[in-house]
Amino acid sequence: MSTLSRLRPVTRASSLLSSSKANYQTIGNARRLASTHALVFLEHSNGVVEPASLSALAAASQLSSGNDEGKVTGIVIGSKQEVEKVLPAVKKLPGLSSVLHSSSDLYSPPLPETLTPLFKSVLADNKYTHFFSAHSSAAKSVLPRVAAVLDLPAVSDITSLTHSSSDDSTTFTRPIYAGNAIATVRAGKEIPLKIVTVRATSFTPLSSSSSSSGDVEAKEVQAVEENGDLTKHLETTLSTSDRPDLGVAKKVVSGGRALKNKETFDKTLEPLAEVLGAAVGASRAAVDAGYADNSLQVGQTGKIVAPELYMAIGISGAIQHLAGMKDSKMIVAINKDPDAPIFQVADVGLVGDLFDIVPELTEKLK
Image (cartoon, rainbow, N blue to C red; front, side):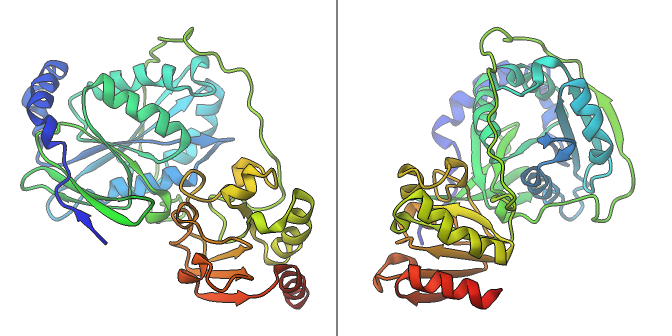
């Protein structure tokens, strides 16, 4: 495991500092705070905060250490109805010092082109030292834009962090090369605002069931209605399933190309998933072959999961797939090839024909 030490934007340091002084003229020395103040982008759906955003909140809460009484502010964005629906729950989340909310029809659904001007306006305030978000599809579109307009670097997909109040630096770790190496990234005090996305599976989500001191102060932020004509949202197509959501399921049953076709994929995996109460996943090869919807893809270019039980059925274990599931607590692999790479990470391996093993296993579990 190689480590890239102190991988901070040193090569940009001189240009970054000069340009950031220009962009943050209104901030001046106010950025040099002894304590931290993080802003966390809280994504939500149907009045519920996304679990990945609760993991980002957990990461932001880790900034406080020792005598550093750090603050964490959440920000909720959407239409007026959406914000009103989710705000009461957000105000009860532990770890938050305050909540910002901004409402506009322009923010429903949220698009990178419309959210970026709002974040730029909010972050131009002199209060924030860090900006956190889950490493979600939305954040992967929005945060690079925000970093670009503020002329600041961003650190993506972090798995841990430590903050030093003595020199106002934050050190992160993040996987690179499909998880085969871990980069250690240090953002020093010359980076006035640390912009970060968080790998949800690496931080236990905070929730209202955790200890909370009650409702926190909520403040409305004026919507910045810019770029509304740049991009238009046409439609949202959602795949429906009775199975648990793949990203947060405690048990996952995944299938690979060995399942031959979509009919066999469903016929083989669905009964087992039903018995286990598990979500169904798929390798990229299975998705590309049309066996499963791309929302079920697990891997480097799909979803990163870390369930208590992960069953890899007919999956050889390409490095890109392993990057998305190797942090699972228990990995069970079924494959007829005893040399398949998946067995190198599996806790339990069954070598044999999956079309014999899976039905028998399903019957025994009923």
